[in-house]
Image (cartoon, rainbow, N blue to C red):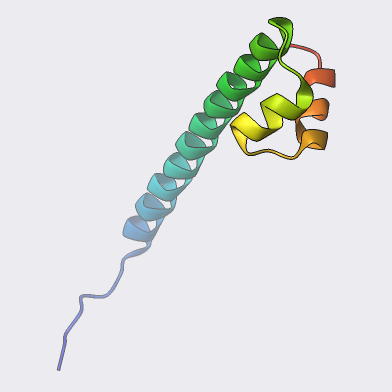
Length: 74
């Protein structure tokens, strides 16, 4: 039989804040990774790679490559 201490409201608030920080950090890392990928795709296109070649190299659909190439650089 396991006995767990009751969770205090303050502990729950701390857990929530930690979870939100982790979520925000993961979202930021994903943004950075996506930005890096998009820049590499643009670089490949600028250096003569076709959308099909880029799609094969990145394992993305050609339409996704086209969308990335059509987006303004931020």
